[in-house]
Length: 608
Image (cartoon, rainbow, N blue to C red; front, top):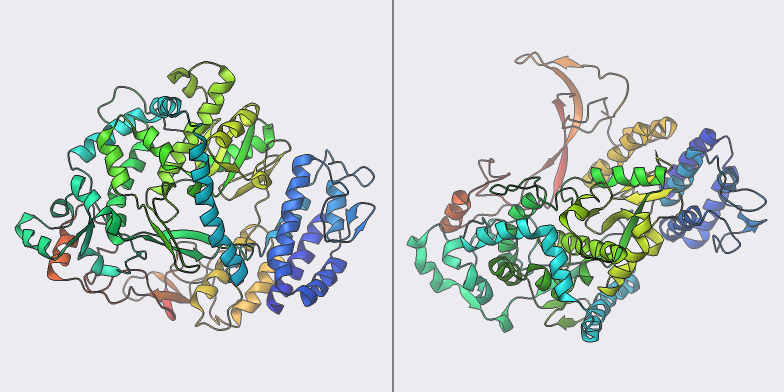
């Protein structure tokens, strides 16, 4: 913890020099409160201060109710007061018109530095998160029982947006032209690595549309493999396993691990669907794809650009949803896909309907949510549902059904990436009402449309200036054996340097040098652990065989765990089309999956 405190004090001192103020008393206060409150002051209390600061920017006012838990003088917190007085008027608390960008960045950097450090939550917070997952399912049932869902209108608007994509996907599934694949992640049936290609379970719902023989065998010559496969009736299907993963110390992230056979076919639908949604023109159509320009799955840049534009011009709002994935109801999806029977049946067949939460001993049956994070189809489906909700709200403003021309007029004004939503400011109220009618909850603390602050997809902006804080993700490593923490610290140091905080980067260089005696200047494309610098790299030797420059640096080494498939599973893996890495590895049939261990080796490497 001492290293984290020292890092904060170094950053505070350098940022104070940027803004011509002092943080000496702030550093003393921080050390005092950490001594009394422990690590939670850095990871929970300080981030709360940062979120309260964002609220004040949104309101344009620092009032008496601002920053609870911090000592004040004349309405201003004493903590970080040197920066706050440069942003808000000392007498009225109103936001100044000439706000210095550096002061806003300084407060956000110092308060959000440790907001997402990967440390375990308390057992109480984890348990509360799991029960919130259960309560969310109860909310969905209550919303369904209110019977206020206008499915026909939802269907009409979603078809206006996605009919071309749905029609093409319907053809691909009906003709059996989708290609399944396995990912490297965990499965609820605890099958990993190459063993995933020897599936011994398949659901009856999948079998009706995606026969095991067509998708899980190299060819029908091996039809006798059916004798060893259990075709599971709906009541006996393997449930998703609900677990927690690190997010913040305030609350963990809750995800659901799918069975291997479900992941396998979800991936088959995912890849062509995302490709089609991001295509400007769908092959065979004589018109542009209407959803192109509104959705993103592989590039967050457009969302960030629009957020920056909204912070400068005030014309675009950024909205964030709470429990976004878990509040997409199955009724939303059924209405959206109705009229495209093969696609609808395929998506529903690859959807798990039961969940097991072992940590609190709860089983959920007949899930009303479409899917939780962990399903491959969760991300694209939720994005399409949210985009439909947005245009339903816009249609309410217009007072008449939308047309293709109406939709196209919002290109560059509406954008969805996951639960990060951008809409015009003059549509915010109607869009919020539309989202609420459909059972979604807007996270007001992370939604902005009044002031000059916007955030979307990890990019934070004030009046067109980037004020995104650099997050410290993992605690300081104790030795080179803490590979992930060493990598994280090096990455953090390089981000700090690129942001211009060179004194702090120099301080970090000394700490890293105690662990990595060789820490040369290298380019971002180099495989080693090294420093980013505006100074050029210096070759330490020339490779005799290639005459290429070399520097001595530490390189992380990871190997997939040993995992051997059967002969049949190996044949299936090799015959599946569209192979991706690590298939190019000559030993991919012997090793597969996410590495469970890592090491760091000292090597002569290319500096670029």
